[in-house]
Image (cartoon, rainbow, N blue to C red; front, side):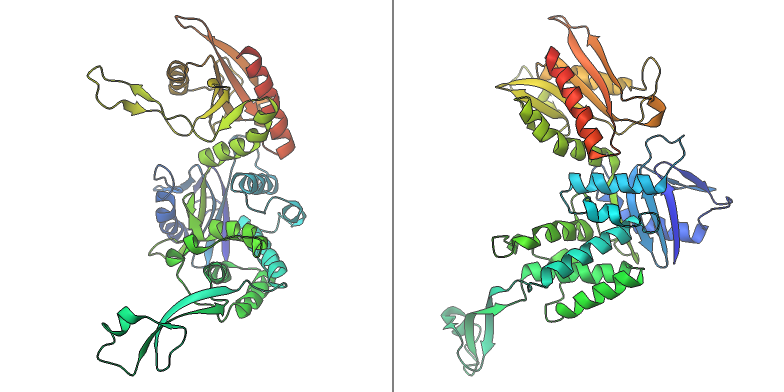
Length: 426
């Protein structure tokens, strides 16, 4: 199988030594269209130009036929990319942001130099699944409605004397059966089946084949028809909770989709802006509690305009900003940007982002604003700069900060320092 690797925003010419052949590039682009469209804002994974294929700001894995491509995050596009380190960084961010068990010791002990992101996910899934099924797959009572020659359970009187009125030799039975054909097991079987199609390492193929035998008697349900709403995690099946999260990541949810539509392919894609935003929120929540402030998962969605005629307010604010409340007041408005800052006077902050934050200060009556970016080698040191925004009623302080996301410990330290500095003036 041909495997390719691109970095975020990398442009790979078709006549380069490490070029992706045009035919393979076309298959990858087609496989990624629908999954990318399902992301927030309907995005693209690739830009297929006349002479080059360019990755966009989506990261993950795209596979089509016998070709696959791994897209890794790289905030500093001018620095030399260490694929192993960037893959490990992405795995860590995914594990925290989506609360899936891929960012612990199991991920760091894998040979990330020889395994793609997809193979690492498959290995982790298979290992956890084998550990879980050793104690038996969960079973429960499943309700059945069947027309049988002899009564089983209780008679469905309504169906018996309507639908089956002309066939009295069949009885409309309503009964419960202790079975392993449950919604949870159907999800597991669907994930196993999907990963068997994608696994390339012999170890993963063998491990998934063994799991498929265990789930042989469970119904085959297409991923789009899986009944996630029927899955209830309680003390009897709590050991499957993390596996369910990983299965949802593989099979698709609102952050990415695991099916590539009509094309014969697979795409597991993540918007780095949304991933960075979610990663920061998950790490910042317990830190905020230590400072006696409460982090709202999303912004207050306050509108910008209130028509004097009393009509419905207009221009609702973006839902992706974070508010930190102290008591009943908004202490800090925080917005994350997956962009590369520059070590110059303006630091690469976009005017549009600045104007947006000024509007937030007015709408939320808040004097402490934070624009948070990822740190990178070009900044030399984690950045923490403070500015004053002129305002009629008094100054508003804007903090521009960058945190190191290479490890969770460094990210937590950066967030703690940022919050301490910001609240000091709030």
